[in-house]
Image 1 (cartoon, one colour):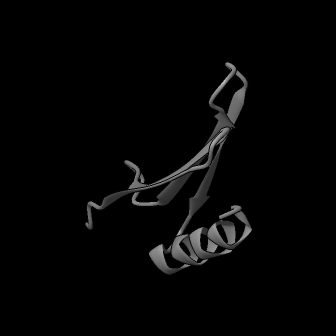
Image 2 (image 1 turned 90 degrees about the horizontal axis):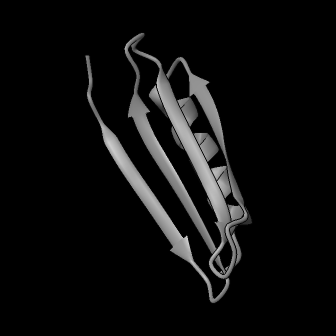
Image 3 (image 1 turned 60 degrees about the horizontal axis):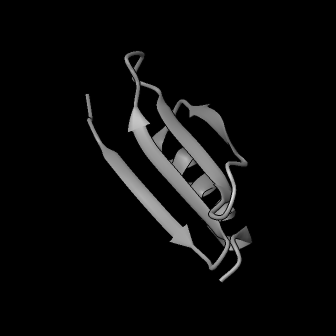
Length: 69
């Protein structure tokens, strides 16, 4: 059983984005994405579960392409 926890963070002048990758108790890979505003309390998160690590990493690559520089 692999145990990996990785966190990616991005920040602009007004926004933040984070992605967390970890393995859950069922040996599935879970991505937790969160985003929001720095000047307000608005934000949200989404959780996705994958059977294989490679699929989770592909999703992270797709998401990071969409985040503004």
